[in-house]
Amino acid sequence: MAYDGKTNRMRRHEPVGMDELVRQFIRDMRLSSGLNRQRVGDVWNEVSGASRYTLGVNFADGVLYCSLSSSIVRNQLYFQKDALIQAMNDALKKDELFIWDWEKKGNCVKTLVLK
Image 1 (cartoon, rainbow, N blue to C red):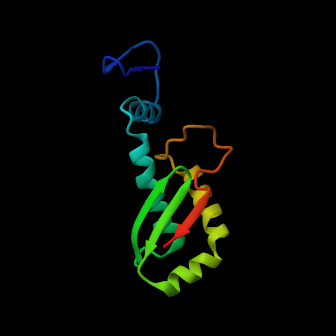
Image 2: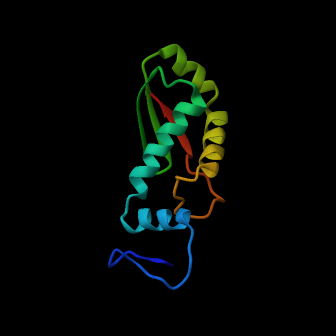
C-alpha cells in the first residue's frame, strides 16, 4: 500500500495506480457508505428511466426505497422489479466508483420498495 491512512502521507515503497489510491483513500476516510448511496441513486435513474418521476431514493442494508410521483409509473416499475434489481446490480458491478465491502459475488441491491 502506498497511502498511509493514519498519518495522511504517502509511502514510497512500491508504485500503485491512482485508481487503487483513490479507493484506499475513500475507505480510510470512511466515505464509502455515502458515496455508495449516491452511486445507487444514480444507477437507479439510469436503469429505471423514471428519474423524471422519482421524488427520493434511499438505500440502506440492501433495500432500495424509491418514492415516485406517478402511480402509473410505480405500477409499471412494480412489474419489472426483478429485472430492475438485476440490471442495477450488473451496473454497480461495472461501476468503478462503487466501493464493494465484500467480493463481487453477492448482490448489493436485494429488495426494491416502491412508494
